[in-house]
Amino acid sequence: MAFSQNNSRGGKGGGGRREGGRDERPKEEFDQKILELARVTRVTAGGKRMRFRTCLVIGDRKGRVGYAVAKGLDVQLAIQKAFTKAKKNVIQVPIVDETIPHEVTMKFGSAVLMLKPASRGNGIKAGGPLRVVLELAGVPNVTGKMLGASNKINNVRAAFLAIKYLERYSKKAQERVDHKKAKELEAKKLPVTV
Image 1 (spheres, one colour):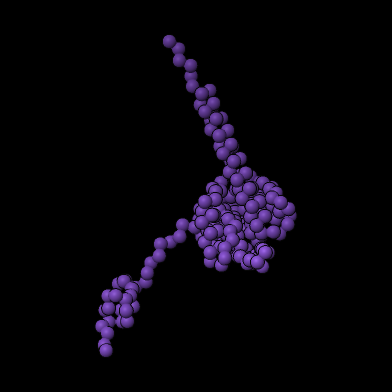
Image 2 (cartoon, rainbow, N blue to C red):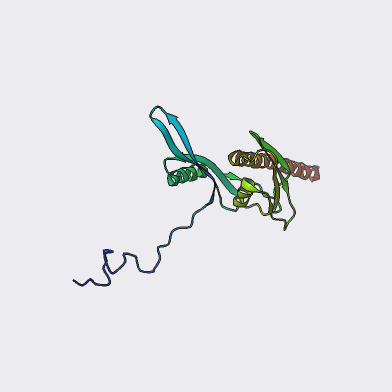
């Protein structure tokens, strides 16, 4: 029995693809990086229950970054859950002159880390999970150091607390600058005489 080459139902011969070659998938909004993937167990009356825990960091390399920790019955399910949770926890990183606005030291649990602004051309000088967070956030020049424990999840949480602190601080500083400029403009106005 002979089959035709252009079988429109995707059987033998045609391959089932549309004309034009490859199937184009839309580009994802965020890049993702798995920081930790662990098999965890919970002991119940019926025995041990195994699940997978993943710590995932996402970012668009343009100033937005998020993270999440999720568990699932298999690895793929845990990654999907973490990605969905991370998209809900995205924060904006303040970037001033291709670096962070000021130095900050943050603690979460026993993880302590320090972030410092760096001059143009230095790149990211940080290690481990801190480097992943800063790369996915899109900060071009920054120096970071993990001073406390090496627990990846706690270091990521400390990094996000530091970024939130930067965000809050830079908003207050911007409000002060705007208020100061407004007062200067008021002072320059000449009094109107009638």
